[in-house]
Image (cartoon, rainbow, N blue to C red):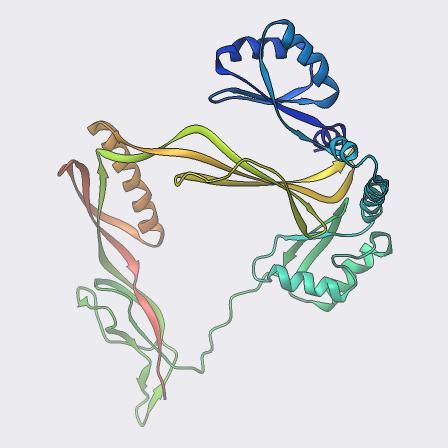
Length: 390
């Protein structure tokens, strides 16, 4: 990023060379020693050269009989030359640079990492109450005290650290582990079937079972009752236990022999924005009318000086990569390999909460697809708590 900033201060110029001379021009430019970048080949050869190297390179190209065309100029030098008789412009630029350097003593952006239950906004609001937020003068913050005050005030956080790099503060925290709630034994529950299955075994810790091994039950059917007969009266309890049943899973995987795939054309369009203190300024772009089919990629990088001083400035680049859609034909073996890969993934997911008893698999080609039909039988706990409303 420092290199980009230096190039902007020095200035640069864009060129193009007709396709007929593109190969020779590329070789000459590479061997000339000129500071060039962004060389690309489309209908013509395009490249960018630092302003001090433009005149020597133009002389070399002319001497070799290569016609070139000047396109656009960029950078601070161009602005200063354009407004060289307006003395307020360089003064304003100097003041702007001074403000940027002074602003490096303040926090201009904050991000939170390590949180799951507590939202980013909540963490940042808490830190703001304790005197650390966007716009805070960094030397005024006692970070040790900040961390201690945060932990004393908010008992849902086990550990926190605010690390400042340049003008960016990164908040790292670890939330307090919350143990699962102890079941409220005063609230009565039944155990009902979570799905259809054939009962294999029961482990009843509380309540009266109403089913037995070998019985087929349907989803929602009562398994263990929380209503107990205490002789002279009926009472309600929180039924607890495990009901292991044999259940069935059936699914189908299809992999077509023809499928649509994206192929990059190699054509890219881009826009660049300079983001300063919350404002965005577009300083380059060649998007125009974008094609209908393109992928969008956004990159943002902070501007630093000498790899240590991070400024409250970042460059955001949005790249649009054009692609075309075509039909790809694969062989039966390739389709079979992909289908069985998907089968393994699906079985791993299904067996996460059950024990496999048996499986039936049928596979083969059908309607230009490789099809796998799978039927699994597994043992799992189907007991589901259902509150008894009094």
